[in-house]
Image (tube, rainbow, N blue to C red; front, side, top):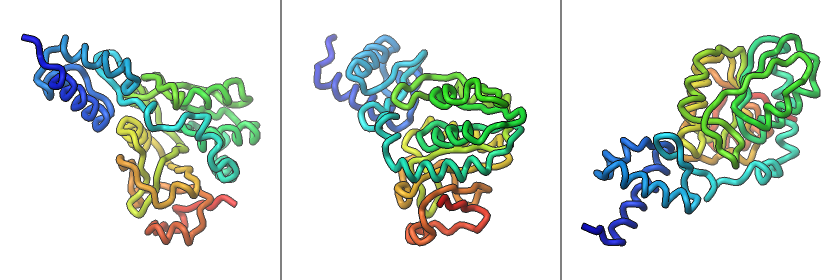
Length: 260
């Protein structure tokens, strides 16, 4: 029996919302939640992907940033001066040897550029899931570069997903430098569940954590909480203390590095 078109569209809209909420859904879970066959689930995914609203993956679908997330180039032009100051301050915190992780995002890209200018290093191992950062640091004197695998998101030029999280199990970091989309009284947030989960996995494997966020992120809260201020993390930002206090962000002195 042929299903009416309006029923099909309602089902696909529900599927889009499920993927947007969960970040990633395997086909088996789609079948369970929508009570459809695997063939129907795959047909629906194909139609939604053709409209550019999701990214098809092996065995499922990943919520795509394309509709509402600025490209890397667009974000690189935002708060460029502030990001440069944050990068210099963060690079000064980086050990000259040991193992560090550099997150995706334009602010952490600026940190990578500052690290290149700060060389020489002595056997510094850098792990990243960012292809732009890998391109910057590849061949830099004193740096041994490792890139984590995963699903490629082209607008962010990053590798993410279960494979990336699994690859982290091989590493322990002396320091990590992470980005974020918002910071409020409760901590750091991101808008994508997979990225937040990945960052949380990184946090479990590090001795020191530095979040690098410019002042435009203060008071902004996006859907997925990464970490709270009760964790042993340090914020590197150009935001003045008055702006942080106004947003309810009350940090201990050792939790804040102000970029000037």
